[in-house]
Length: 217
Image 1 (tube, rainbow, N blue to C red):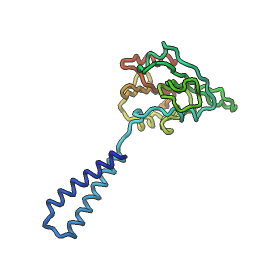
Image 2 (cartoon, rainbow, N blue to C red):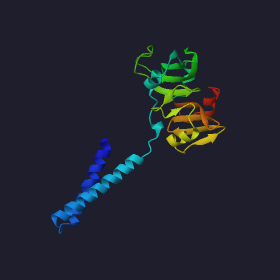
Image 3 (cartoon, one colour):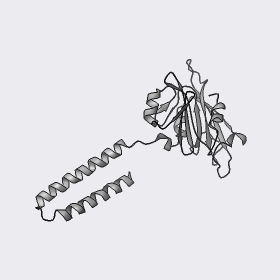
Image 4 (cartoon, helix red, strand yellow):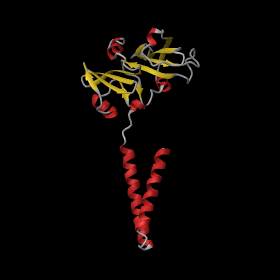
């Protein structure tokens, strides 16, 4: 990343200046070797730090286009004003789309409803084939859709979920809840497996229990 590159160069320059000031009496060959050793150590430390950095998946929005690409069928409609009150205010608060997510059943027919997704679009609200959808909320109740580059999905092990999102969660009535600013993520647990997922961006102070009751959690 650009910021990491700038930090790396800054650290190297500072270290080299300090080495130069403290090593002015050393021979050129020895000084050059020591400088190279120090630079290599700095690189090793920076690389280790970057590789070990844990990125919170919830810092990223759900990729709406990726979800749509996994579907075998979909129905679309708009949410009523009443049903959009839980979401943060936008410029117009219009055109919240509601997608019913459909996958093929065992017979190969696109009849299996695996969840739903709410999007916001004030540019092309009446079109489905578009890239102007903004993620708002997704609920998954069956297998078939993966999120965040196949890192989260219904049917995954609880241990794998914690590896991906960390241990900063609350658990209540077989539900793990993660909070990241206005984004909340809920995971229903049965026999150490994730059986339902709900992730969304909500207003501050929203009643989490009411969110789950709406989807028969």
